[in-house]
Image (cartoon, rainbow, N blue to C red; front, side):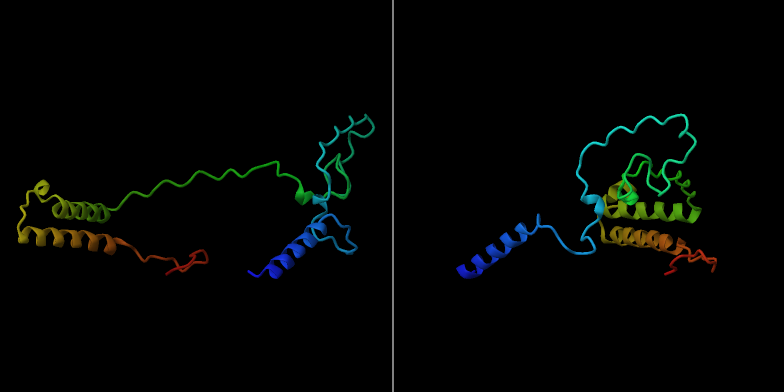
Length: 157
């Protein structure tokens, strides 16, 4: 980068930094008013007297003890969301369990043929590949394309 471009960028950066503390005359603030407030610990609220105990905390919608210019959305959230318990997993169907067992048997025949009483011949390899493909086909075939055509189907692909 040429030196004059670098000097121009440095000067532009200095102008931007100098503008951070400058007062603005814009009619609309550039950021939320709550960020302009100084971060000092809040003073404890005075104890309500007996004549003010039954009155609402604030008429303008802000919590008691806070000035009117504080935006309620900028206040920290007091509560938290506790999700409901997840539903139980459905029981697998018989054909799904059978497909998983056949697939595992076929993979065992491919990886460790002696564990399923096969040898290292080509016919054993072909049989293990056929059993693996059958297990995969059973699992894919067990997928259901059931939908209710109701309003809460979501995306049906």
